[in-house]
Image 1 (cartoon, rainbow, N blue to C red):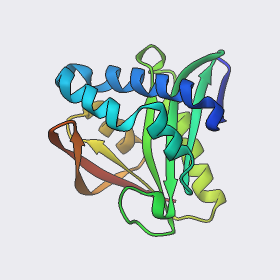
Image 2 (image 1 turned 60 degrees about the vertical axis):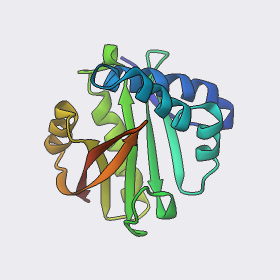
Image 3 (image 1 turned 135 degrees about the vertical axis):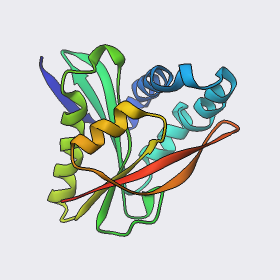
Length: 171
């Protein structure tokens, strides 16, 4: 399979919004109410919201393209763009998603390796992320890559306060 991680620009916002919604619904739609999913999508995954994030200093999006198909995406944050204040030596993987039909093909590791490589290239020493406490496959994937839990924070999915476990990897 031919794969590419393409950095998103403003011209990619429609494609980014579509893959963001598709992967989020696939990942969490069955475990959450349709109302809370729709509220979250309207608050966080519209073209306008994503365009503002694309324009935020320290935030970067990458489209995962597999055999010519947009299969997922990666969002990283540094500096003040991080969702928690982790300092200037850390990189946050805020979002990392692949469509279900592409899972099990090493694409998650490909995206995570890109994030780690970016952090190393920039002289950073930590990569961190938040993962829903009930997302056992993702938590196992991150542990397999060497991430360790160091805390937690609240994540609002619509009107439902949920808990994300914070995990980090020293590099």
